[in-house]
Image (tube, rainbow, N blue to C red; front, top):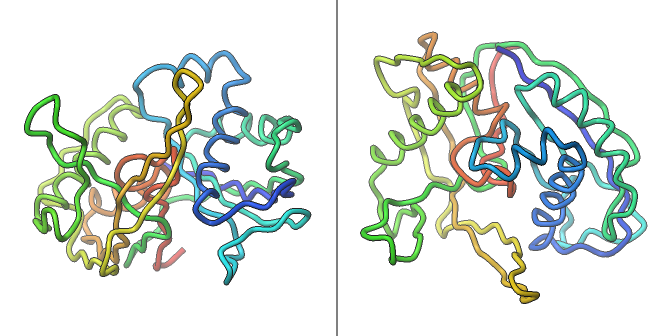
Length: 249
């Protein structure tokens, strides 16, 4: 297993606030990807995307990314074919009203020992609904607080992503997380907009920032590495669960 990291340099055509930034990047990626029929078909199905992305850098003190400036964001995927094609698809999207990609640098990362993981963007995890009519709630310390349940859900999500891409199951003997520390006092938010019947609606996803110490066995390290390539938790195509690491390469 390996993952591919694309560092994308974006020129902004309009000011973009921090709150709007993940939605702007997400929509740009989705539109670019869907210009190819193969990925459009996949996008329209309820399947894992096998990529994740982080926010604009450098972070601005006033939380405003300004028109006429360039900022970078990082996109990762475990799909080599997708990574190679995405470089061209992103650059070809020149009519987006908010941004344009002027440079994409790609590198390949092979497995290495991971001593710690940190969430650069909020990790989003759904709670089970009591019934179909109930609103979708997300894991927070206040609402749930069950760390063991959270760890099990995070692992199960990664196992499903692994099986979906590689076509085989991993059989861990323990949870890949040895230690999980919630770093925020209040839930962290990711916003995106949807349009239905020409009416726009703003959606708020609630997540958390974590420090994670993974276990050292082979499967735990494999899952920790996978989280870097596909994101940790849910809603990664909206910017959730983008991880950074501490370890030895």
